[in-house]
Length: 305
Image 1 (cartoon, rainbow, N blue to C red):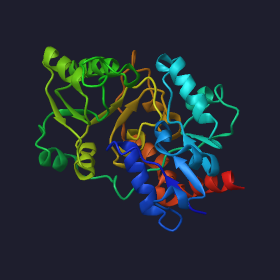
Image 2: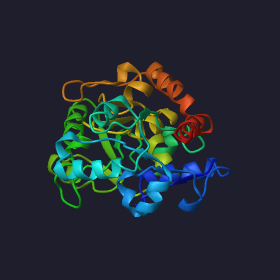
Image 3: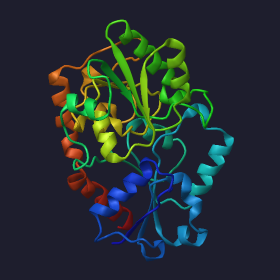
């Protein structure tokens, strides 16, 4: 069996997932789709980067990470249904995405969690990480490494919940001496609001993996306030780093995060304790890529059977 993984080449998470696949599965991976038995559309929206002839003659697995109902219009439906002609099996990372996709297709759908590369994400010294990143060591560091704005505007990307994140930050500010650490790019909404609210922050755009690892380690509380997600990857990376985390009930949260740390982000606030952090760490161990990759291999074999 030979697998080709289609990457979007956007310098974002799907490219990293693709890179990790090729690193850990060199014996069954090919760089030329013509040589593949299975083509994995890991970035499903890039399906039209391949020729129709290729899509028709190969077995196609398409990952649908998440669908935002408010943005899924007639054009989105038309594109989904056209691509659906070529797909043999859908992969989704969580039950929420499954419940949406099953209304759109009669093709088989497999729910399979993301993996985490535990060679990259490890526990470490928080004080040292703060020092190395030149963050205020005596402040309570609240972090978010997801984009929060639509394009290059300051309009909030509501599915990521930046408005909810902002409200939580303001609540915590009433209790602790805080500093916010932002990663990624398109952070205009939060940056502009932090300036208005006089909230101190540090923005590190498009950090390397090494710097991103340090950013997790420097964090006193990571917040996922999203309304819709496939993962996000932070729900694997933060626990692997033993970083305290709270999250909305989104994406893969219920499969990897302590129930204590899954909150109603509009109404609640919670600070994880040592037991929560250890539970989150223990939960993600079974998703180590060295082990969990076999579930993906089984999926590819299934579509060939």
